Image 1 (cartoon, rainbow, N blue to C red):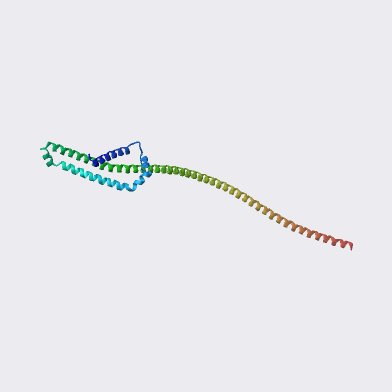
Image 2 (image 1 turned 30 degrees about the vertical axis):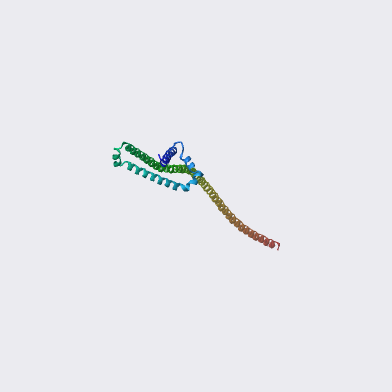
Length: 237
């Protein structure tokens, strides 16, 4: 195996190992994301896309070269000529085997390179979705707790309003009773005032009548005194 294909084979083995490690079930996506967010990867970030596409281009070139070799040694004419020479036939078979091996190595390396990038992307997306889901769940729980609290506050407010309404109704009834009582007392007072006014008017009339009677009697008394005085004068004469 030449140097280039040895490097491609090692690259293939490394890809297989990395993908197997990424697929381990006991390592969560959050841990992988925390590992991917290390500061050391920030240094490779500007060169990651360039390196990725460069590796794809190299693997495609090697794949096409291996495919060309397979077609070259799979041609019927060289194989027909090689049947006449057993050593040449074995040599061509060996070349064909190597070209097919190189084709498989380059093809699987290219395929796994794309798969590895996709796996890393999916792991990041799963980690982000997990964090987002946890955050949304926390927000939903907080919203549920707030809704329950608001519901309890609403019930308490309704109960307070009902109690206040009951108290207001009771207060209105009490005020109504007090007003009715005051109206009755006022009516009684008015009746007493009317009765007092009537008694005062009666007393005034009685006083006026007594005054007139007193004046009449006084006048009559004076007349009698005058009559008695005149009679005495006549007797003296």
